[in-house]
Length: 361
Image (cartoon, rainbow, N blue to C red):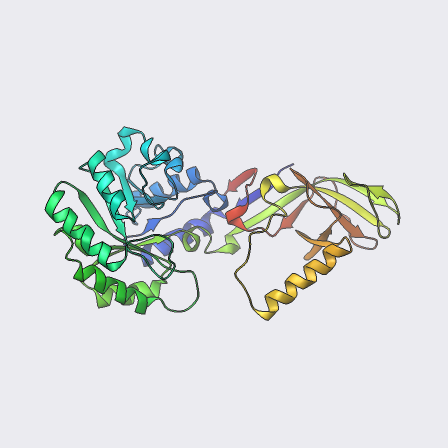
């Protein structure tokens, strides 16, 4: 009766180990919906990696609001990726987490405010990249270094963070330029001065970075590659809840649609509450992507929209827009008709899907 993520546990765990072994200093990322697994489950799996000596001494979460979901499931340090601000959830953290908590600081006024509130706070300084999302420019990084050296000797500076774009192609030339800024900033002496926390670099790029900067400790923050890197270990399925035979012109659904021809209406688990039928904007501007968008728009205009549900390897059409916890599919006459209770495959975007159940073998 549920939208289920079934995980081949042995294969998945083997993939996690291989990623951890290939990425020394690994910082797993668990945020949002936990890449479909839930944040709590990923926190426990990070502890499992740490217990095996495979890194994972630090877990990165997206926001301060996510800390309660991981704090009791993982015993190491907790890095918050969203930059600290002097308001909201950042000021409501359980004081007992302070020794484990590593803030991200991306503005000079925030650095001063954080250290005024907690002179012994742990933090990384985020250096702005070509993403232009958060971060200190080179001159601000130098100013932060002077501030820490002159006025805040108790501050626990943990390194510099770089959040790089997802775009394909090597980011190493940009990283080299950014690390020159870090070296030139003359950050306070200690491990933090030679520690860089990076995202979206390949294993090969990380190896080249370590070779180019042997005095630096590189901490790769990895989410998608770690948790979703072996898609063959993951299977999303829905349950067939009902099957109705229809003739052309028969009325069905919330919005009283009419059947375009003879066939079957299938009611299956999985709807908007799970993220089914909800689509994030895409940055793909290729001709192929534009053609696909036009094709989907054409289908929509005549009442046919391809669903993510597949039967016998073929994606089936929505009979009408999906509902909260179920969807209605149209199966044309002549197709094999599943039985009530059968499970069918669903193609999902894991980072936007809320599964009813996650089953790990």
